Amino acid sequence: MADGVTDRPVLGERTAAVVGTGLIGGSVLLRLRAAGLDVTGWDPDPRTRRHADEQGVTCPDSLEEAVAGRDVVFLCGPLPSLPGTLARVAAATDEHCVLTDVGSTKAEVAAAATAQGVGHRFVPGHPMAGADRAGLASATPALLDAAAWVLCPTGSGMAAFRRLAALLIDVFQARVVPMSAPEHDVVAALSSHVPHLLAGALAAAVQRSTLREAVLALAAGSFTDGTRVAGGPPERTANMLLANRGPALTGLDAVRAVLDDLADAMRAGDRAALTDLLDEGRTARAAVRGRVFTAHRREFPAAVDHAGELVYLRELGAAGGHLTQCRVEAGSVAYTGHLPVPPG
Image (tube, rainbow, N blue to C red):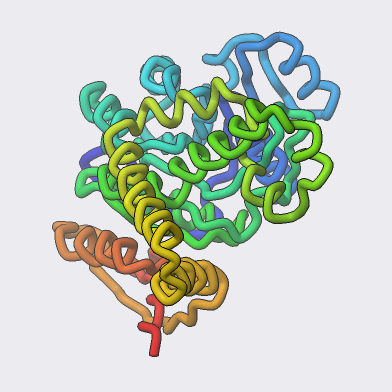
């Protein structure tokens, strides 16, 4: 292809690198290694590099040495570092190398890739998985298994998107969710970022309480489930929230409106209104694991204008759908997509 990033057959990616080997990056690295890829790691912390070496993972001292000659590179460092790291990695890799990240916001790094002239081979990504721990010592090869994994395709980067989607599906059994970068950030605000704010607020309210010890003595599932993500590194959470400030504040306003409605119903002693509001939440909660999907297959020519393919992918993600197959064969690209069945 003219952009230098060629379509490859399934499992065509044989070598990979992971830059930033914390919880997510380390888990990506361990799964890729378990799948049989030749994978190297790199981390700015020398102690982390030594720990990786002790685990049998090649982890050179130089970032450039770690990524040179790789088929795909995952950028897994802190959000503020991604644009600078992307520039270094792009300069040290060949045009055929697909670049991606795992950051929880997408618009900023996507804009950086375009500005740096590597948008044709950079695919913004975000696996929807994590834990209230951090560091390579907490990483496991199973952490990202079957996760929803957002990828942000663009018209100029369709070949890179196809290669990366196929790899994630084959290695991680990922449910690939295609979205535009700005749309991802709006959706992630309510699905991930605002929950961090709410968990932190609830836990902080207990921390400030004069009856803190008594509250903690009675803390059961509702408290521990509701505050789980408050146990993560606060610097990482702050980076995420500030990088997605606008959508997160909009989402927080939406939650505040519901809280106001709940408070009004309680003040008025309006049992019916209170029950209806709680039932709204119960319905959404039940739908998280209770959705039913229908499968379909779509094909597009592999070497023509990608406008129709891009529209299909973005509409699929916006509708709550995902991909479980991406194959480039005999001049065409075939997708197996899944769309949720409307309730009722």
